[in-house]
Amino acid sequence: QVQLQQWGAGLLKPSETLSLTCAVNGGSFSLYHWNWIRQPPGKGLEWIGEIDHSGSTNYAPSLKSRVTISVDTSKKQFSLKLSSVTAADTAVYYCARTHHNWIDPWGQGSQVTVSS
Amino acid sequence: DIQMTQSPSSLSASVGDRVTITCRASQSISSFLNWYQQRPGKAPELLIYATSSLQSGVPSRFSGSGSGTDFTLTISSLQPEDFATYYCQQSFSMPLTFGGGTNVEIK
Image 1 (cartoon, each protein chain N blue to C red):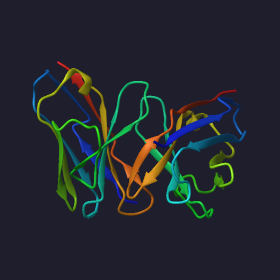
Image 2 (cartoon, rainbow over the protein chains, first blue to last red):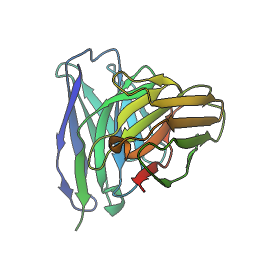
Image 3 (tube, chains in turn green, purple):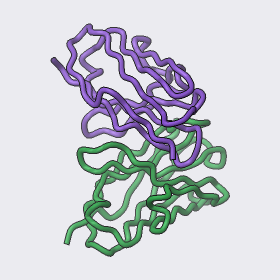
Image 4 (cartoon, helix red, strand yellow):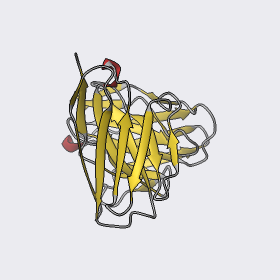
């Protein structure tokens, strides 16, 4: 049973870089794609991007200029960096696995607040 | 990008009611449509994948149907634990996109 454990800084100032990491416990790492998804307060889900074990990535066009997703297969971890954050980036950020063509499971979520 | 439109955005229903939520894609996505349930303060959980396949452990009162651009999630008899927000999501093409969500509230 795979579990995702995520962590990272929760409070940022505008223009700083958001950094989150997700560890995959149990199951295969190389067979799947690994995603970051966010949810602004009171709003819906927004897909940020994904990476596979080789480092191949896909990003949401709206965030592509500011997003970097990287992978460390030796640690079974993947990470998100989002640069030049603003208040609009305040959200709960989730890591999640793509299993075939659906997203399951999800991490517990990390609240990230951007405030001066 | 493929736009996913859910309706209604919210609904009030009673325990035992039959509930139907619809999801429309801006272009054909074949059967690449998934549904998630999110309870307050929790991460979303996969409910139905590939339009109509029930995720392991999900009660049989949940069902999904559709193809192409129009999809439906049905709860045959609403239970107290079903009050939550439901999201559809297409996996036909990148970027992955979600519907805006349907909040199912207690009447």
